[in-house]
Image (cartoon, rainbow, N blue to C red):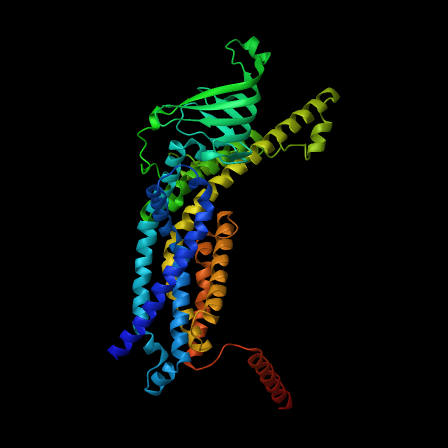
Amino acid sequence: MKILDRYILSRFLYNFFSSFFILIVIFIFQGIWLFIDDLAGKGLGIVIIGKFIFYFIPTLVDKVLPLTVLLSSILTFGTFAENYEFAAMKASGISLQRGMRSLIIYVIFLGGVTFFFANNVIPKSEQKMFNLRRNIAKVKPAAAITEGVFSDFEGTGDGMNIKVDKKYGEQDRFLDNVIIHKKNKQSINNVVIKAKSGELISSEDSDIIQLVLKDGNYYEEIQSKKSKEKRKHPFAKSKFETYTINIDISELNNQDLEEDGNITTDKMKNVGRLIKDIDSLGKNNLEKVEAFSKNITNRMGAFPIPIKKDSTKKEEVVNANLNRLLEGQKGQNDSIESVDQLVKSLPKWQRQQVINTAKTTVSGILSTVVSKKEELQKRFKFYNSHILSLHKKYALAFSCIILFFVGAPLGAIIRKGGLGLPMVIAIMLFLSYYFIGVFAGNYAKENNIHPILGAWLATLIMLPLGISLTKRATADRGLIGFGHIIDGIKNLFKKKEKVSEE
């Protein structure tokens, strides 16, 4: 039996590593297209680009590894069934589960390695890749400018945002339709510059980058210390043919492209850090909600604050005082029963004033609630993304095991090897698994479903499919077809007829 286990394991490993290599190359090329604008034509060396790709590869494991397990298991067991090797094993008294024993042990081990990889390697790779892109943008300022959106010009010390419609030329040095917002010391945008074109001029020997703008306008809000002058909103405006901005980059000459910055996103955190942040974020969000609720309640004044019981007094004394208070209030019931009655009881000159005050108060409270709602939604989305990332690390490990129990019996059922039909079936199943996971994750971030369910939903859907396929393959039954469904319906009607005759 050891010879058979070694044979099955060797065939599976050959298909596994071959599929993994092919799929990782495909996904690398697909991923490079996402970052081609950040890398191409920026004067970066081959070593830097190679490091970027090296850091990018581990981030693909959550997509490549489940598909690899599914495809390699279908290929292996499909080839066995096509070459009648399974028939020979069954004739020798070896069941499907016994033939899968060595692979089950390997897949469980692979699940543990996958969890270690997702917990330690992928977060570090995400952080390295993020920092490398950020530092490239600092050393190569043109790389920091994205077409069509406002981009922070990092590392310059000038504090400005720049937007361009188009970049072109050598190292994207030429710019079309430039809009610049410059910030003051208080980080307030008080200067706006618009130009039809611009050019970035730099030299390797110089610490200055020149941004030469042509044919544009300059607008600046003048900050005055006197309150009377502030009310006049003073500003300066001018038109220019050529305007040069000198950007000092002396701080960036010794910039380390692999310098690590702060961990900013949930993808860059391991399990321990995620658990700690989830706890602190949950408490912080709860405190924010309670404080906002108390603030709105006090502003409305519609709900009385409950009186706390005095723990220093005996309960009998407290009850006696309450009874006396209630007896004294029996004859002092409020004669006003509705808002309309309250308004009518007021003088005419005061009614409109009260109504306007109420409208202003309500509109103010509503606007506060709407703005606070957006803030709280962002906070809870950030909180949900942490829970989602935590459970995705566990779900990824279990998905490798479950997808093996989907692919192996499916290969034995379809009895087809090679890269034709097995590849099509594997891709269809994986796309179903992947898109369910993506949609569930997005729903979980928006708090439409629980984040734990969002992380596990795709895996839980594949679990009964794997159990069903394993049972059918063990019993030598094919996939469910229309014939089986029709036969089942006929048998159901026959049973009903027998019962009615009796």
